[in-house]
Amino acid sequence: MKKLNNVLIFLCSLASVCIFVKDLNIGATDRFLGDLSMVFVLLIPKIVRWLFKIKITDAMEFVYVIFMILAQFIGSVVNLYNHTWWYDLFTHFLSGVLTTILALVIMDWMGVYKDKNKWFNFIFMISFTLMIASFWEFMEFGADLVMKTDVQHSLDTGVADTMQDMLIAFLGSLIVAFSYLIEDKVSKNGFIKKIVSDLK
Image 1 (cartoon, rainbow, N blue to C red):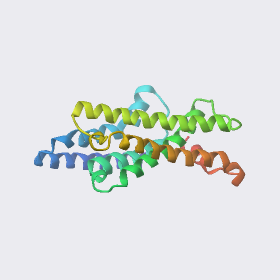
Image 2 (cartoon, rainbow, N blue to C red):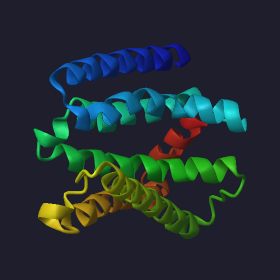
Image 3 (cartoon, helix red, strand yellow):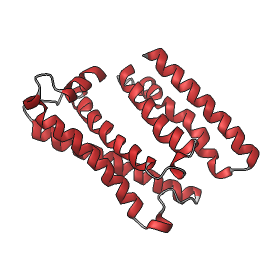
């Protein structure tokens, strides 16, 4: 899986640089940052692993890379957000699903996960997802202030776009969290627990 991650990172970075050259030729200066930041964003797991000596498994890195390809590369660099109305909702829903699973991985990694405390785990999963969703909106707001853009569509929707993004992430989180609560009653080998185990 490590080789697959490296291949995906290389190909996506190369494609981003090519798109940057194209945008440079047509003078699309508002897209420069998004094009070039893709290379750095894809390398974040490797940087964190090297800089802070934090254990990030190849499986976790793979999930992250796939999500960033879907959310940032296809969404922002390829610009599908502006051409397909539901794609932004899809990526926020997916982020809710993935960050909820990540919450369990983090709890297990920190040694605080206890199978008996299902309701505490449930609350932590939801809270963690809402925290990540909030930070994402903070970054978009900051980018709009610095770059004089309107990523949050505040000029034409007010707070509607921001709240819609957070609500759809919350919905994704609820689906995973409730599945976690009831999976032991449905199957002896819980699906969510199996995913967490594979990511460890």
